[in-house]
Amino acid sequence: MTIKKQHILVIIQDLKSLNVAIKHAFKLAGIFKCEVAFTFFQNHEEQQLDENTIELIKNANPSDISYQIVRTDTPKRGLNNLIQQLEAIFILTQFPVHRIDRSYKLNPIFKWLFDAKIPTILLSRNTKLECNYKNIIIPVNYRKECKEKMIWASYFGRFNQAVLHLIAASEQSEDLSRKIKATLLFTKKMFEQFKFDYKIIKSQSNSFSLEKEAYELSSRLDSDLMVLMLNHQEGWFSTHFGPQKLKKYLCQKESPILFINPLKDYFLPCS
Image 1: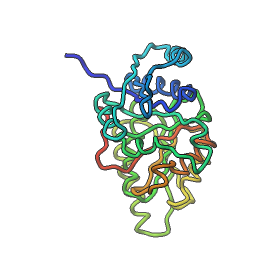
Image 2 (image 1 turned 180 degrees about the horizontal axis):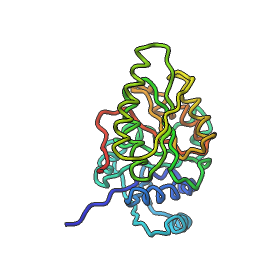
Image 3 (image 1 turned 135 degrees about the horizontal axis):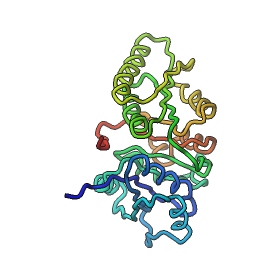
């Protein structure tokens, strides 16, 4: 019986903006012992990689990890069907600069990403090429959905022995403080099952301004990944144009973003 391989799923927005995504895709495939699949956003008539892209893949793939080109039939259900077929672990996509340098620029790919049942690693031309995914920043606020961030971040500790930095918000409200402590207790119990290093950093910021401090720490700690989660209801603007905080971060910082939706029915990778 053959064992089906899991995949890193790369969504191509523009063949001219793909060099960072290729490098990171094969790095992640090496970490998680999986393969790489490329699909074009908004199906191009000719879904083929050009010679330059093939050369980039060759240079980024010294271990000769298998990869393939796949087709997504329809934007929403089709993407999740493809995720299931490929047993994809993460989506990965690189934004062309013109998609993130202006607030009022349509970003239709976010409709896909908001509906996807696995998280997405977001990249831009500013993202560092060499990234070991060893140093992870996770803001911890009072929202119960924050536990989902811990579950996904734990895969980098388990399979890559990454150090996870938990940036915990400070709240004056006892109720909100208890929620943060409950998340940290849940996280501690989970992380200690797998024997990887993590650090809890007590922030001076509350939950609403925590991410700004986490952004600053990401530079000081030379982080390899920032784990961010959106609210349940981001609204029409974010769905069509993209969340402003994500675009701002991609334009200003070198770390990739692990973008997580607060869903109840994620497809979790096999252990």
